[in-house]
Amino acid sequence: LENSVRNSIHQTLGEKKMRPVARTVTALAVASVAAAGVLNATRPGVQEKSVKLTAGPLAQAGSVGSMRSIADQADLKFGTAVNMDVLASNEKYATITSKEFNSVTPENVMKWESVEPSRGNYDWSKADALVEFAKKNNQFVRGHTLVWHSQMPDWLKNGIKDGEFSPPEVRKIMKDHIVTVAKHFKGKIKQWDVANEAFNESGSERYTLWREYLGKNYLADAFRSAHAVDPKAKLFYNDFNIEGMNPKSDAVYALVKKLKTDGVPIDGVGIQSHLATQLPFPPGYAENLKRFAELGLEISLTEVDVRIELPVTSAKIANQKSQYQELFAGCLAVKECDYITLWGFDDGNSWIRDWFGGEGSATPFYANYKPKPVWSVIKNSMMGSGR
Ligand code: G3I
View (spheres, rainbow, N blue to C red):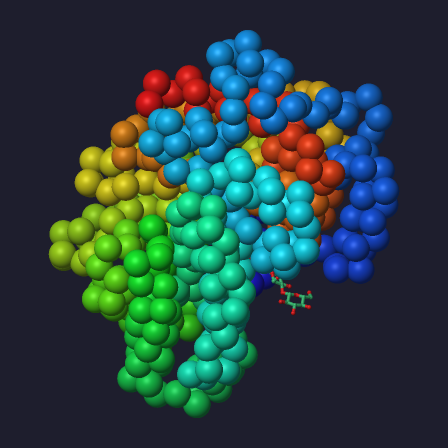
């Protein structure tokens, strides 16, 4: 199942299939890159100069201060996915996380395999540490994620696959998990990704263990269970490759419309926004946001990054800037779209290096934690949004 997710991210618009990168190769690559100081320093001459966090071109645009202060002033939520191991061990990473963002999302530590590694035995340690960090720094938390076919613990995955649990038991396991997790974090989560990635690129339902055992209504059940225990948290359906108008976003649109019509407590759609410079910017982005907003739903860009096929060139950097700009400006032009999260802010800790061989440089900070010029583009998009 996990491979199918990787591949489907790549299959969009005819992109070639890639294999996940072996850890050892990645480690070597990262080490050599770290020695060079920046992840995308693969070709001298196209390395951009890093920008200062509070001055430079932005000062001319009338802004001093952090991205976070810009977001706060505009009443926008601007977040990053957080790797808890790095947060615990790297001061620079922790400082940027607290100073530049008013929201955080756990990249992995609220997922099922992390919080319930064996049935009924919950390990909250890393997720609680992030919630504490956010509280200390006055940040929102996006909860990620309650029901997904990936990163399920072995006891659950194998138990379902091997027929160890009957369908009613599977239903109870799902409900118990949602209720326990949502209750544990009650009052601390601004938005929850209740359900994640339930569709294929064609718009057909992804045939997950959940879908197989529980039938079509498992998504509605998941939202109802979460709402019952934490009625103030905003509940989202979250998926990738649904930025523009396409069969998959049509399917998500049909789903959320039906959920709304049926009175299911859904508040919004999470549009992951994993973009790539070798692909065109998603066609029909504005139209797509508009139709979700017209359903009375909130919209969040939940996992933003724009990866580049290495080596980086000036043209690819220009393309990346333009895609970040379009993504931010398009969201901020829609009243209902007021929450944007980067899927990691720096190249050194980005998931891209492990998942897409030959691609990288997807985030606005180099691996040495210096901001790239695209950071200014993002800042200017926020400042220029008129919000
Ligand atoms: O936890 C194990 C660790 O025990 C082990 O030593 C290590 C060795 O490989 O692996 C660790 O697990 C890794 C896990 O992240 C936690 O770090 C997995 O190998 C790795 O595959 C996993 O990747 C995560 C991926 O989701 C899994 O699906 C990425 O970090 C994370 O960025 C990514 O996030 C997803 C969103 O949740 C949903 N949307 C797509 C997005 C990107 O795939």
